[in-house]
Structure formats: C-alpha cells, structure tokens
Length: 162
Image 1 (cartoon, one colour):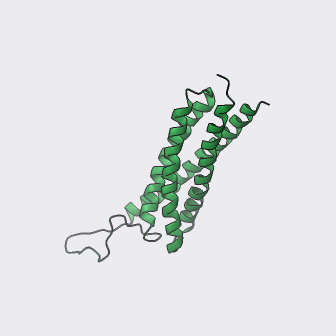
Image 2 (cartoon, rainbow, N blue to C red):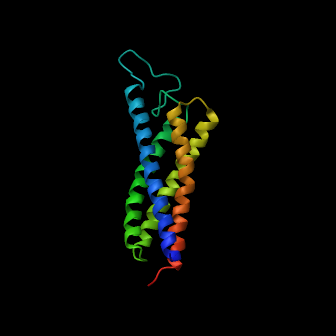
Image 3 (cartoon, rainbow, N blue to C red):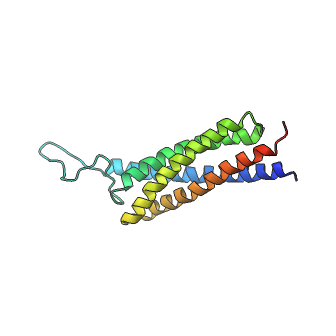
C-alpha cells in the first residue's frame, strides 16, 4: 500500500472517530441544556432574583457548567460540520479540497480547545454528575484526535500526485 493511501486511511479513521465523539457530545450537551431550561430559575410576580443570579444557571454541576455546556454544543456542531467537509476531502483526496477541510478542522479544533478549557475548570470546581464527566472526557480526547486528524490531512499533501 502506498504511503499516501495509508495516511488517507488513518485520516478516515480519525474522521469517523471524531464524528462519533462529536455526536455523543451533542447528545449529552443537548440533555444538559434541556434539563437547564426545564429546571432553571422560575421568577414570578412577588419573587426577587437570587443574590448570585446567573442567566447561565444549570441545576446540575457547578459555576462553570453553563459555559462548558454552551461551548461544548458549539464545538460539537462545528465538529460535525467539519467531519462532513472532511469526508468530502477524503473522498476526492486532492489539493483542491484540502484548504476547506483543513480550515473547517482548525476552527473545530480551536472551539474544542475552548470547551476543553471550561471542562478543566469544571473538573477543578468538582460537583458534577457522570454525564458531565463523560462530556469532559470526550472533549479532552477530541482536542487530541482532532489535532491528529489535521496533521494527517496536512502530512499527506506532500505525498499526493498532482
């Protein structure tokens, strides 16, 4: 097997892994957002806002949970879109499709790093449930696998035929 084909296979495997992990992050993040909307603050007539009211209140987790979930959802959506663009690049495997796949993957990776930063803050503050711990782990792993995917599609560019 030619080296370019081996790199293409590695890139495809990383792409499928990232896609599946981003879909799981979206599922858990969607659950957390739905729970926050259903069980958030209810302010009616005659009630005052709590002293430490935050519009990003999540009934589970800690103070970082709201930011973590929102940025994880954004990273998940962009990650899935990046995987779709990457699938087109793997299919054609030409230099013409590389810029769009690489730029979408880079944007997805940077958003994943941002969500990972909030995941580390949430880990530091403790008090979170198993689903949030799972999403934290997935985002930490995704920050590495997305970078490996970017390296794989860039590394193969020197081995492609014109």
